Length: 556
Image (tube, rainbow, N blue to C red; front, side, top):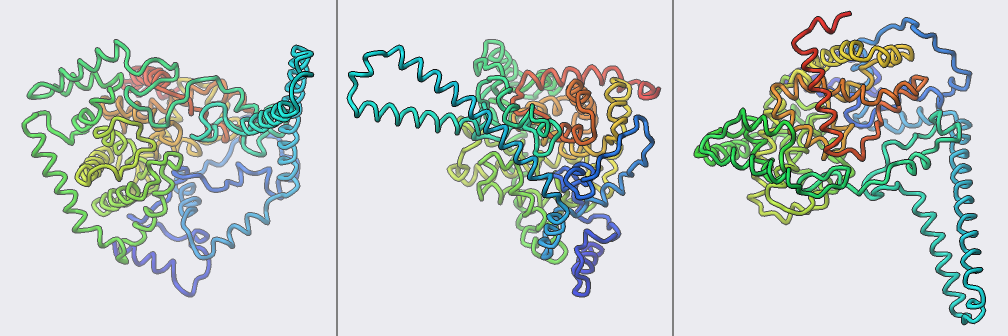
């Protein structure tokens, strides 16, 4: 802790006016390590090459198989480590970025987007005019007999229809209040510049599916719109209740049932059992819960007041910055009381684990536990639920249970967050080797355009795919992770491999570095549900069966 505080003082010294992320400061074990991809990634010169002044020149052709100096993990981490720290001189950094942007390229792209949208609106207006003329011919002499007031009303309705049509064109086809579609092409992408595949076209090409909340309720609706509780699901729920009803829960049987998904009604108790938070013996559970909850709030009393101490203020400051960024599309997580709960959970965990401290991305790992344990006390949708309506004792229970279960999860993957994050480094390397064996075409395609696995898979490992999937899908995914031996630390590798190969067609269609990176960082999973996650898990299990016990299969 002394080394950390000394480093903080050194970086904030009066004599040094430069932003500390611009200097090659040595990394100190235990310091906050800011993770690329844990939040929205900073501007990458390679990814945004066409927006830099130098990019005005024609891009040089990429030679297939051209050798490229590999970026080491430490170099990559050091380049982006402090990109999200807020300082007094941030305006200087922003102004530097603005000066480097090629205004002509930006304006040209923006004008093309507006032009394409205007053409689409003209076509729609022409179709509406033709339809209106047809209706007038059908009505014939009846129109002549209408009063002037009725003519005015019809004109007002037509004008209102036009306005509504224009407004609807600006929103995604699905649930506009939820999120902007992940599949929308960013400004400046090759497809948009071509004028044939704008973001609006992508939105309209999405399949018509029922609106699914980001956090599905009851039996976790799936994308086919099936009833919330089918006969099969009711039968599975009965099996869970039978296993849980005994004096000593058979954890092995519970894992077998949970692998294919856990019904919402029994998910809280099942997660607590499978994570090791609660004992299998029913008689010991209540006293265990009381003891662990009291222990957690004992930590609050002992440590939380020290958050503004010199040794801990950097950690608390980073947590305080990250909390509002946690699932910003879900109103539940923007409530002040929820954010205070998350701050306490993350700060106490960081204080009790000095080897890693707090790292960006850990804040995401609290959310599934919190949502599941809120469901234990409510029946309605959780997205817009006001947690202040719950009793204080209930909120305290949810907070303590979320802390302990998150701690259990992180105990198995803590090397992902220690100095230099060696766990993630090993997993990304293993993913690259695995993909080269299961789909050599995809692997060579990314090599050809010099896409390094670290550039997109780092976030997959650091956030356990939580940034790539809706929260409802993460909860379903974690049902299986809880049931699978070493689910978070080992099985997750095969899920990532299956997830990458799942987008094989889209990956092979991209013919440059920029297109591949935009795709891999914005995969269109917003409409995913239980069906897609189940298929992904089945493929991951097949890969694990083929490769996990045969390490030589990694080799050529």
